[in-house]
Every structure is written in structure tokens, then in C-alpha cells.
Length: 377
Length: 263
Image 1 (tube, rainbow over the protein chains, first blue to last red):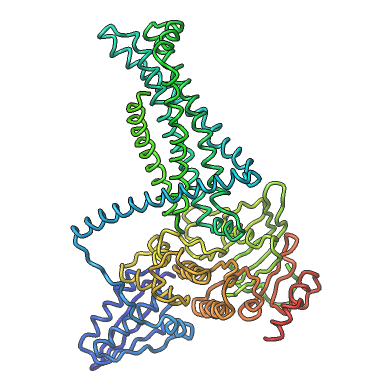
Image 2 (cartoon, each protein chain N blue to C red):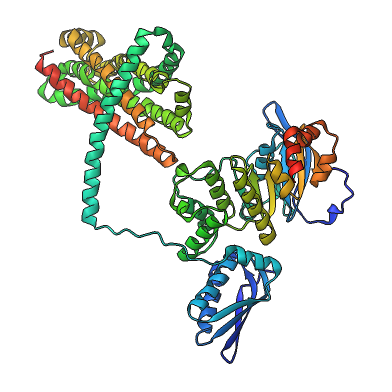
């Protein structure tokens, strides 16, 4: 049933008669090419080649293509090549595939150094464009917020509530859990290291200040960038891919107002709440470890904590949270809107959204640290 | 099956569906559906929107689970296949999805080459040439080969998807509304292309379509789906003569009369 493709040649003067048999199909592609190559070699020195197709069992587009290509190559060598005995359906197939050269895609050669410099240049220009776009987008969002504030009837409360549930409520368990664990670890390390100086009770100051000023807001922001930032980018990006954003636009709805403001507002409201819960969980974890591992009873822990921290310590963390939220929301939305048609592009923008948000969160935290130090808060 | 006097019983059957039941949750889409697709024919498949034409196609392809019944392709029951023989069957069919379903991160040429690379042992040269051949066969310009699906128009996506469906020279092609979204000239060319391929490659074509022109010009037989069953199947004359109310509305409506008058 399955016979290999086969071309037997027979010479008569300067004429070659090639009788082809077997299945000239894609499944036997290497043999098909080998047989065609052999035929090409056998025809060397002849002037006329007659290719007899009458015994071919099965021919598909690959077989027909290779045959017609061979005929063409024989012709290019100055030989006269003809098909004979082709069945009607094979004839149509040969006509349909008819060999023609395809223009080779031009191969562009680069030197490695040039490529490297081009990459650097592109990255610099890209960063500049990111900053410009981010600023312009911030303007758009603020303008949208003002519009909504002036005409509260246009405010989409259900969307905000839905986003708040996604961003804040559903994030509570994981964020409090990791904050609790980090609080435990900081307390344990603090006790362990401070023991050597006999300064064990200072672990309360350490945990209290560190958690309230920096750790809670950083942990929460990074988690939210990973959880909600990526989700925003993916949602907005796939809507962009399927022209849903364009559909909103032609209906006279502003995508910023419909999609982005509820998300950004949900982040701005949700992140401080999460930060508060995160600090409480971390303090609880720290207190627990201080009690079990360091022998500092909860009463002493609380009394020392009151002495160690002021209202400002607590507020510093909380003040930063809405700014982090704004940064994450803007980057996530902007990256989502930058998605092009392909699935690959969606993946790239989601990655870039998370990486950029986390980087910016840490950068903004650093700026705040300098600012608060300067104003002595 | 429709009681026909045609000696169709001795024709070779490519797809045989018996007593098929498909549903989602509470909803039953089709029940007791029987259908034969003969080897080498172009079967046009019609039905009102939402009657489950695409669902039937997907059920045959194994993308939608069925509740009851048997589907045989090339005489083999799809339920009783080992994974390797199932793969062998899948190699012998090509599918043009309604919206193309091209891989968005690959160029058109790479899309066409995906099944070739997977199943065939081809030299790079042949791989390129064959992909370009298929791309030209479906009527795309060579410069479309390096484009990505996002840069193509709707009609070009259809053609590129057909090129991918034909990549392995399949014996059966499933076309889900191949001419929807094409201009009439493009749709006509598409029909001619399918007819040519059917003649040259001995293709069996299962075509879900709403295009009356396609039904008249290229389909050997037409099957109509309604109420979860095949309400009629046979050459288009049989369906034209049918008294079923939906078929009468479909084939004798204002639009249909315009097409029939022109043929």
C-alpha cells in the first residue's frame, strides 16, 4: 500500500526517460527530495528528459511542487524536460502549484556593536517616552477625575465597588498572612541579634518603627502590584486586543472614565486600608514572636510600643499608600493600553507592568524617605 | 436519514455520525442527529443562527464532549482510538475556524509551517517553498507571508487560516463560515479555490456556510440543521423542494430568490 517514491531512469542516446512510481507525498518528503535530486544528477549530460508520471500512485502538493521544481531546474540547465502520462487530476495539481521562484526575504546584516548601541539607544528613547506618556496619562486621569467630580452622576459606583472587592477585599488574606510572617521574622532576627548587646527589649522599637514606616506599605504595594496591577493590565490589554476599547470610544464613552478611573480609585481607597491591616498583622506577628521567643509579655510589648512610636510614625506609612496606589494604577493602565494585537504582546506588557510598578514603588518610597527626613517628620 | 432514492449507500463515507446528542448543562443542543459525509464531496451545512452548526463541527473535532452517539471518521470510531491513532486521524483533517484562530505571535508563514514542522520531515528550503506555495494558492500576496495576524484584514486572515488548514494536504477540511466577511469577488474566488482543491486533492469538504452563492455553485450536497436534527440532506434541488417551513423561508426568501435567479 505505502510504496516509497521512486524514479528509475533509462538512457537512450541523449534522451533520458524517467519512470516515476510510488507515493510522491509529504509524508515521504525526504525520499521525494532525494529521488528528485537523483533524477537531476542522472540527467547530467543528456539533452532531453521525459518524465513519465503514469505510475505515480498518489501525488499531493508537495510531490507536485518538487516535480515541477525539478523540471524547472532541468530547464535552467538547458535541458528540455517534459511530463508525460500524467493523470487528469495530477495534471490539474501540477498546473495549480506551477513552480515559480519566491523572492528571498532580504537578509539584513548587522554588526554586534551596532546592535548593542541600537539597543541602548532604543532603551533610552523608550524610557523617555514612558516618562512623557506617564505624565500625559496622569493628566488625562486627573482631568477625568475632575470631570467625574464636577458631574457625580457620571461616576460609576458599581464599578468602583466591584474593583474594591477585587483589589482590597480579596487581597486581605494573603496580604495579612505575608505581613504576619514578615513581622515574625523581623522580630526573631531582631531578638537574636540584639541579645548580644543585651538590648533585647529594643526589638519592640525595631519592629514598631520598621513595620509602620516602611515594611507594611512596601509589602502591600508590591503585593498589590503583582496581584491587581497585572490583572488590570491583562484586562485592559485583552479589551484593547478585541477592539472593545474602540467600541467604547465610538459609543462616545471615555475609556479613561469607564475603565481606568474606577480601577485607580479602587486602588487609592484600597491600598491604605490594606496597608493598615498589613501593619496590624505584622505588629501582631512581631508581638507573638517577642512573647514566645524573646520572653517579652504582651503588656510590656504594648507599653514599649506606645513609647517607641508616635502618631507620625503611623501616619508616614499611611500617607505613602495612596501615592503608591496612583503609581501602580497608572502604570498598569498605561501598559494595558499599549497592548498590540498578539498574545505575546499581552504577556510582555503584563510583565513590564509588574516590573515597572514594583520598581517605581521602591523609588517613590525612597523619595518619601528623603522628604520626611528633610522635614523632620 | 432522508429517504432518498440515490444509490448513496455504496459511496465511501468519510464521516458517519449516528444518534449524536450534545448539550451544555440543562440545555440540549442536538439530539438523535444522523449525518453522513461522503468522501470527495463538498457538503454545505446550513441552519439558523444558534442551532448548533459550529457545535456540531466542534463535536466532530472532539472539542465539545458529546453525551451519546458515535462519530466515525474514515471508518474509525473516534471514541475507540488510541492516542496515537487519534493523532493520525487529526493529521488527515484541516480546520478553518470561524475567526481564523491564527497564532497571533507568529507570522503568516510561520503559522502555515506549524503543522508541517510538527508532522513532516522537511528540509528548510522545502518548508519555506511549500509555505509560500500554500500562501499563494489561497490568493494571498507573497508579502503577506511575513506579516502577523494583527496586521491582516479579515479576508486575509480567512485566507491565511485556510493556508494553514491545507498545510498537510488534509483529506477532510472543516470550514466554518469560510466566505463570511469576504467581498463577493473574494468569496467567489474562495469557492473556486475550494472546488479546485477538491478536484485535485480529492478533498472532502465540510463547510458551514450562510453564503447562498457557495451553496449553489460549489456544494455537491447540502444538509440543514434544525431542532437539533438534520431536517434535510441531499443535492440542493432536494432541499429546494422540501416543504419544511424554515427551509422554505431560507431558500425561497427574497435574498435567496435573487441568487437563484442569477444562477
